Image 1 (cartoon, rainbow, N blue to C red):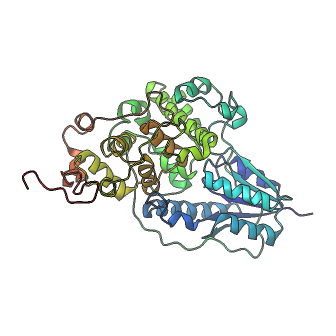
Image 2: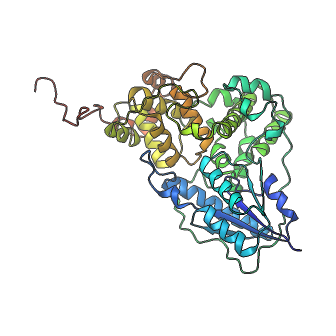
Length: 437
């Protein structure tokens, strides 16, 4: 009896080192699906959308690239703009699908869809595989409910663990059913030339980066606010799964063996471990990732001042460095790691806003948005997450003096164009009058 499989692509848009997709080789026919969920484009309770324009274009580029790669393997990608559970349910019923696979996803909503499908089709086999992490859950030296509460504790337990070698690139897949449509035609805006989406661009960045001397000085340059070679820039492709983290780790190890192994190359691994920690953090804490009180239960600031929020979003605060960073984010979909810490600290401590609104705006704007890293890092800065110090408050002037002493970054991104007054109205929405009036 022939077996029809369905594979649901999400944050794993590649054919290299794809353990979840490899399991579909057992099928006689295969349906490959990617869904653009309409909910991504609707305003949410935090005054933002899950998918902004730049991030949307970056994702569509990756989907187009995936479709092209699948064609070389004898497959085609069905792209649907609809809720995934509804689309996949219809396909399972129409094609009598007997096996449904996906890469494990840390997102709460993605897993709700998955559980709903499993309940709807109890006779269909559903499987998930760890495709986005260095380690499989079964290889962790602790049960997931016992995930360490801090990154340092986690790192000490896992940093010496072996990492499985990446799997070979898939070159052949079972054919799709005869009456299948291929990818939709997208209008792709050329918004960010530095970051073209997709597997081919991801692998090109890996090659270019490790062919250079940049990895050997990563620790010294990683906090710079600007410059292509100052950091690895892998995060956008890791987030969309166009780049396998195990492939990246293997290339790092090769660099250390062939060129140099030093504190900077270790620090690249250190950053991958931070990413790893937040992946398992999201799997463990689920809904608490979006809770005002985080995973700690500490009292959080549930304040929302619309004017302050809008000034922060649009780079119109009294803080030139924050303005410059937000202007860069809005125009490119990217911001340095140091920059993210600075603007998040400003949002929480200077503007005294509910951290979740800032995290949601990052979700909308960042091309490297990853649910685990984004919300986990915002919790960390807000003091309701994994930070043993109970949050981080960055002195904006000190950060400016250290990372933009000559004002080049502020000038480049027009940070001095912000409003020098934070509030124009008081808490009751009455205009604030100058002294003496």
